[in-house]
Length: 277
Length: 277
Image 1 (cartoon, chains in turn blue, orange):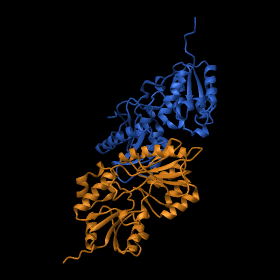
Image 2: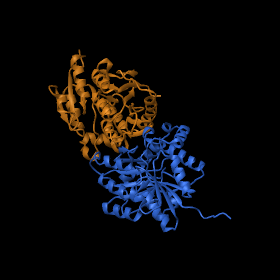
Image 3: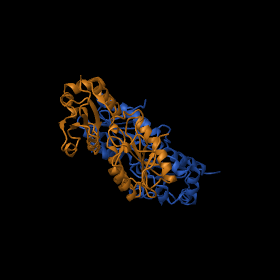
Image 4: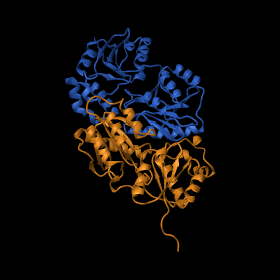
């Protein structure tokens, strides 16, 4: 009789705090993991003391071999990946075959991620969402997280921002916008939300500060690329002179919820889960 | 019998090289001008040796008085205006009345400019486009300006960028995007094209460089806010590692065409007028 216990959870780890958080959640739940750490993306601390191997993004054949050699059948993609140009990717034969099939340049981030998920499933892996393995409260609920609430002016900026963020997402450009008093201070593209917040610090106008609005892209492959906020997001938002953060309820991952609330309350920022119209 | 000669052309001057260029074109054509220089926007050199007065953006009543006192009936809005928040605008009674009518915060840039033009016409001024007073070749023609042409890959980036720039414009966010090998490196919002190009320098990927694509917003009030490129744009594009600039033919102003061509040829960049799909 075959052993029905699942092997270790395979974690393909990019950058940021999410992969480590996921590893800790799995450990707390007694689930073994094997981490395929992406070179140039995952941080060394992420895989500290954890079964792992490092792999280039372009080395797909080696990646598949490593996952299979470690008895992985169930797979999570976690963390951010700084999407490389095709020329810097140096694809091996397996990656080149995939890119030739999907047309690397023709795809936006979202299209590419969906294609990657399909390809992993074709290789026999079951791809699951990171939130299946995090605490139950990892997803942002509707309503405020901390003590502060948006006033009428901030609410108007949130509504305007939501409409724009959805449109930007539908174009597969990014997930986030910053709006202040009706003015669009910035739109997220490849620089990511941290980069967006940093540059908005220099673009703010006098008067009540702006709002960061972040949503899932319509049709986004949620198993691999959920919008995420963490303590870092709150700190950068405060430094940019913003009054708060609004993100899509039920779709956004909140890393270290208690710390996010503490940071927001300390800085006088609201963090609110909103529902896209 | 009334004097049928028009008074001086009124030039409401914002920042950048365009207002001065316009003044020089008028002088060459023998047309007198009176410049209303916007404080914090227009550069002192713009009004050097030219009949002018300085005026805050929020001081609409004073602005109207100055224009009438100088016999202005025909008016051009030229140069960029760093749109302020309502709180830093300190509107006088006349500006406050206008903003109360149009709802300052509810309007994007384009909506606001259209409303400003309507208000100026209601006050009895004839608002004309800056290109009526510039050299005949001030508008970008279709096709290449200099020696270099986009190759197939750059052409694909231009097409992708055009689609996105039109969409961004329809949302009244901005006029420009930077695309490299299908990746959207950046989207212009309130920071303007120069700011976009500066930050894209740090976002470029290996391999063939990206393309700046700039279009008029659909429904844009072309009398007051045409997309503009100049030598400065070419230099910043080169510094950002781009391969070229594509802008909407027949809608984009080219400042100092001969110098733009020389700068582009020297830097190995293409500058091409394209037609939006």
